[in-house]
Length: 212
Image (cartoon, rainbow, N blue to C red; front, side, top):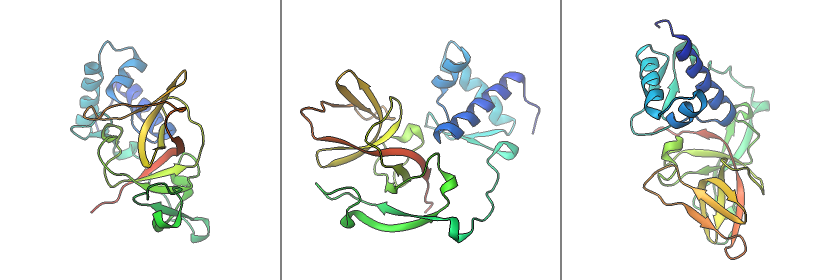
């Protein structure tokens, strides 16, 4: 791989930190904001240079489609002894009105290494749709979820509104909760906790992709 400039090293470290802390790479806008660039285009130019030098791979069409390569990629994890693995239930399509972990919602279970996740998850949720595409969360992915009843602004959550369960980015302003998509084709969902039947079902702590 070609030698990186000081600025490129800085951006590469920013990408690593974001993946380590949140499980997802940063957007161009977040990189630009963090490093004081005037526009996301400046961040894009540095990312393209990193891609040409073999440090990252960029997936077209998504704002978080950045993957570390080569020596910068996560090292292959050693095989985890079976005794240290945890079993996580997989939630498929949630039956209307039923608790998310109700028996009728369980498709199967997966044996996973808990070290894969930012925090210990309680279940896996099969993602449906493309509303979180630009956060790198695709249709068919398995989202690792930790059960919580509160969240901070900017966190990705699993929320229930009435009989619908959705994955969105959480934002609360005053008494209003907004569930933000990461795809411009989808609208923000505004929730009035007093009028709407709303509950947080959990916090996203990692992602598993199933390849077909």
